[in-house]
Image 1 (cartoon, rainbow, N blue to C red):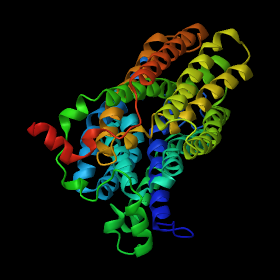
Image 2 (cartoon, rainbow, N blue to C red):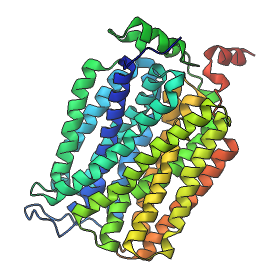
Image 3 (cartoon, one colour):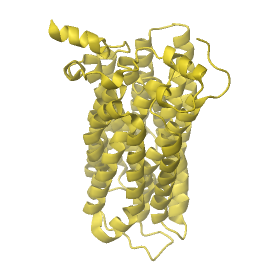
Image 4 (cartoon, rainbow, N blue to C red):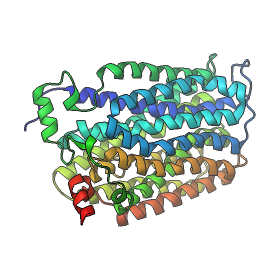
Length: 451
């Protein structure tokens, strides 16, 4: 069936899911700048006390969100398929927004441990959001638009960081102080929740005002995604014993290690090693992610070009992209000890993070390749287990870097990230796949079980 002309309901849904990811990562990353201001003596607002948190405590705080995230991604993927993603996304975002608004009160009155617990609760809520978004995409994305739509929606993670970092830097340096960072991101989350409640829909079949032509176009071009997936029996054992699923889990683990180590620690590195003030720190910390956003457009266009002409298989395309992201990023990190100027350091870190944009056409959309019917669950399992590295990376960095002005200690942390990048991608190259798995079809699973 031919594509309906102009913008349609599916584009509105994609815009809302994109903005949900923007806010998701904005609420996640606000602490990267916030924690520098919270523990820095050079802030312009003397009414806010300096929080006496040690380097190891800050590492634990920065990784604590993922303890909650790890616990709810798999349940989030399962429940979003059974119940539909709309109301799970609404509830998850609203909880995230409220916790963000409460963060300053908790930090100022109850100490670092209670603040860490609030971040765990934030992670519990966020664990439901991303799998629900992927379940939503599986229902709303026609095959011909899959690469670009998924890349654009997931790029919201980078947009959230790019927007948040400089704004957070300015807010922290303003008379409002660092609490305004959390208030602004939280209020934006509340606003999104209110809008989503009225415009969101689980699928084209349940949307009240979509045109018949657009609904038919989406349904007939959704390859591998059944309209009855909500009632399918979950093939737990085949999923949990699938080599491509475990290869993807390890790829997510290595990707998250490098990504979140850099995302959460880059501001501290630039502040304490090169002396950037809090305002310029926000701008410079956002630069690598802005370049990543630009490269995402380049990589997604290249992937669509390659895939549309069958120049290589989809599996090979996913592995090439993952290799650029992880091995390219590892090489850039390994080059840091050989330079000494701040400009060169920022350049290499920018290259490492920008190359990571290739993951948007590599491992990140792979759950939808493996199982359109169980995308949310596959993503929940792989992202959930993979998110353990987002706990370990910042936490280990906090223990390695006991003196934040010591450049050699930072290099050791970056070497560890590069090694994890290399090993994780090697496993994905060897065992990964982009073929729809046999257990995506519930009837085949039942036949195999009976035999």
